[in-house]
Amino acid sequence: MPHGFGAAARWLSLASALVLSACASVGEGPGALFAPIPTARPSPRDTATATPTPPVAIVIGIEAPCTTASILATWTVTRLAEQTVVIPVDENNILSVRSEVAAGAGGVILFGSSAPTNLGAQLQALDAVAPGGIKPFIMTDEEGGVVQRMANLVGSIPSARQMGATMTPAQIEQLAFGLAQRMRAAGVTMDLAPVLDVDGGQGPNNVDADGTRSFSANTATASNDGVAFATGLRNGGIVPVVKHFPGLGGTIGNTDVTAAATQSWSALQSVGLPPFEAAIAAHVPAVMVANATVPGLANQPASVSPTVINGVLRGRLGFQGLVITDSLSAVALSASGYTVSSAAVAALGAGADMVLYNADPSTVAAVTTQTVSAIVSAVNAGTLGRAALETAVGRVLAAKGADLCS
Image 1 (tube, rainbow, N blue to C red):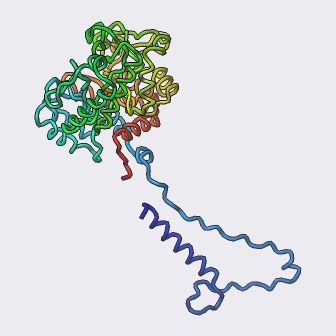
Image 2: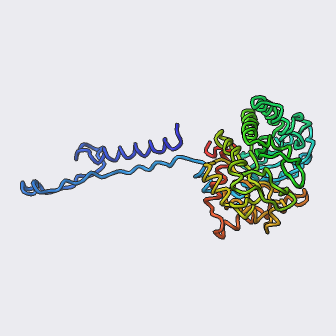
Image 3: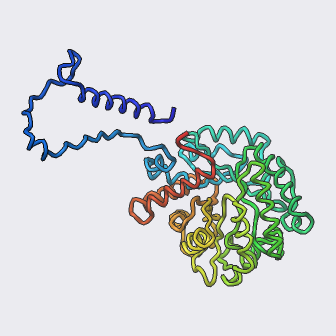
């Protein structure tokens, strides 16, 4: 029976009984509930001019249907803030972030180069402490080539550049499908891949963040192969996150170690943006935003820019899925005057849904506390709208497939 139907039915039954009782003839016997009310017999003149008494409307209260949005409206600001934060952890020390997950962290990102053989069991123990059964995303960077966190568990795969040069899109999709199945078996639920940047440089290094992480310096190849990889991951049960919007290809400087600017906005629109447009057309569920500035579009790092996120990604391209920042502990952010916590507030205000950072294991708890506190303070001060925060968490839960009413 639908929730609330029984209550409505009982009200309807009671209302019907009252109407029937009120309409019963006077003196129908001991069961009559109302005594007769004497009235004067109207004269013919009175009868002709009397205005009929309008019927009494009976309003029956019916409960509004439950929605995730209606439940989020009852959450504390702190609980909402927690769900937007991604916690970094050494994959060989998973339970060190147990308290953060128990507090409601929205995601956990694994760092390292070799995962423990019992990773799945440890992640299950971590999931078990998540409040309300809302498990965090378990994220990792499993791109291929030099960027793999758990190759010892899921197998080594070629770099994106090698895939782009030697494999068809169908073959790439099949490779990613198998990778996703192995990742899922190990307890991972999200891959921060593929890279959709159009790049032909020699990186990854401090000058070129992409290099072999890019499928190709050709826009069409980068589009087709990147979408194929994302499709394979998704079909294999992993949430893909395409990156680094609006395109880092050709950027001089790695935002992890220095401030950097992408190619001009006019150049990006014809060369760097099409792979992301193709991914959105293919219904990719999540996008990561870069930390570089975009000359001709935004002077701020893209990850904290309303123009980039709400203006271009959500507005012009119509993307309504999950938006995740690149690491807010990158030098590109600090060089622009941001701390992790202030960047998190700015990113959420710009339209991001989840904020990501890195930190030494000894400072993870402190940085997480500072970040959540900054988000809560911003909402309480009115500089970050609670409605925007609820919308962000709604997208996080949608990407997780979590229904608060089920």
